Image 1 (tube, rainbow, N blue to C red):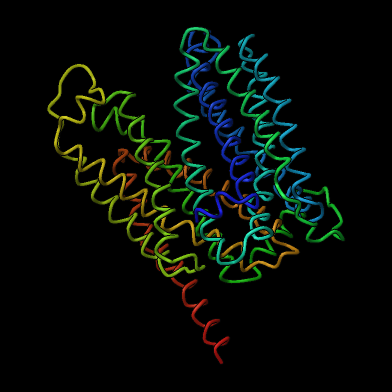
Image 2 (cartoon, rainbow, N blue to C red):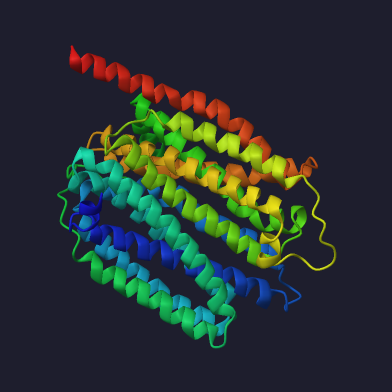
Length: 432
């Protein structure tokens, strides 16, 4: 896997993806902090409502633009489109800087929507170009590195965005960081090797609803690809539930402060990265779905462990526990171990699914199938928010919500095992 990371076939794309994810999360978290503190001083604005709206604004473009993005990624040369997408990012970050300095929530929300659109166009490009530059026995390693890098970028971006915006001259430092990331990503994109158009004959259809329905038809053509996409979408649903509920879990269940939330985010992100790399090591670069069901079962079992560890009462009274006080309580190490186990199992679960989706899809429709995957990912994440709200309305607490997710993981493990059976049948036919 090291030779892939050092190769021009992969390294520039990896860096562009890493910097883009870092930038997204620096901007999003700085905006959330700004909304929380600035909106709180304005009687006409509800900070909690605005933060919720911000999450929806970022996801909405995936429904609106993924179909168009998939068509363009199949029709045109991919590395050229990536350069254009990065130019758009530079322009958007320039507008974001102005929004931060003027504290214009409307302008920053507009930029957030457009950043979501930019991400919607980049998604089909980054995943469909991998099979163009990597051999089939390199796809697992490439996807493992992409997933590890993405979650590391999410972690660093979230922490940096929150810390910098509250520091002295915070707007200046956030502005420098987001512009630097965008410019560097654009410059690095010139080193991405060209990948010829997969389907230059494709006619761009601007009716997003009709084209989205057509793309869903491509997604359903092959059972193993369809199951892989459903499995990927489930992963993002689970991740969305945990990441969204960490603050409430820390405060209401563990009586801990925001430093513990950062610890949870760190453990979770690094665990998924580690699990992604472990998965590639286990399968030795082969595209193999055998460990996907075990990853789903592992997520379920470690979530049950988290549930059991969380129900012992915290003896601390008064002020919330900071991270150092939190670590002095022995059972909290079991909680951290459970979170790490969930994340590592998630990394083992997700990497083969991405590789299967890429390798088993015809090159002429690969980007559009990946666009369909992005649409379903977004739909599952929206459903996760609605389902969580529903469970909380039924008086379930956060840890009970986690338990429900764990129980649903078991039928998901049963479903994705069909991928293994499909692969086994193909191997038997090829041997004949």
